[in-house]
Length: 415
Ligand code: PMP
Image 1: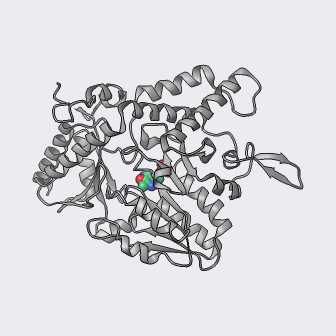
Image 2: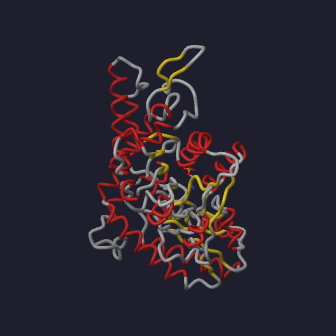
């Protein structure tokens, strides 16, 4: 067993996984790169990089409207990618998977299509106090357009959702509950199954923002019973510019298109246009074809490692990092929920998070420093920003040690 694998659950193929990620082999500022910014975006394995390159080398053409061989091949691979995402989320049918640019676009699609068609003056959208801006602002926009209003369920000082308070806010005017599955700022894993049950008991649909959840745990939209589920490929070791919205077929059928153009139509005259069936009704224009194929390669790659193994490895890293963080003088963890994914958000007395992030870069350590697109969370904890170390499938306990040792040194000099 190598040093890198010394503490991880015995069967986890950490060295092999690290070797799959060319970007990890580099030095930054003369030090081996320690990449701990996975919640912002993950690095890509050669299986994804090679799939993109091979697709462009051999199979690329525009899709769905070609009669030639390359067009047919590209269409088949794009639709096979949709089937891979269906399997990944355990959706009932491939038509329930709409390819989008990412989580942000998925939520905007629901707000502008479902929201504009279903919201009236005085209606309410219920979210939580730990949402990413992309699960706040699209709702504010549609509230302004329709006269609906946004309600917010509070969190406690551990960064946990107060479920009874959420339940209290589900009322006769609630039209949709939209909740983050795993918080990017705090790591909190929300009790999404209970939230769905609470909302469904009142006949209210639920959207789950799965941007942070999908890289860490298996997601089954049928078991969760959610109505919408959104995620981004780039946080899942896949390409940028591609993600998916899962929506129940009957919802997609009833929803109007939100962008007009090619592909989403059946017939067009200047007087009237009829629309294509879902999911095509929501995929106007030429989509991110190669990126969808690359996303499917990323999903295949992760399934090859296995979700249980990934979850166990990342849980070990989080536990280890949380314990070692206690050694750093003046370090305050932001986000101490009982159910957490592999995110360590913190502040340190007397050193601004942005300065810490910059100093850490001098050690070759990449972390995020900022508000993480969750300004209300920063306000709640009364901090301007946090440093966030977020772990992925390729991180090691040694890297946690490097982070903690670097923090101790920085604080000794500047704290
Ligand atoms: N929701 C959460 C919880 C996120 O972490 C992110 C990305 N930081 C998003 C939504 C938005 O994802 P994207 O930028 O890929 O659209």
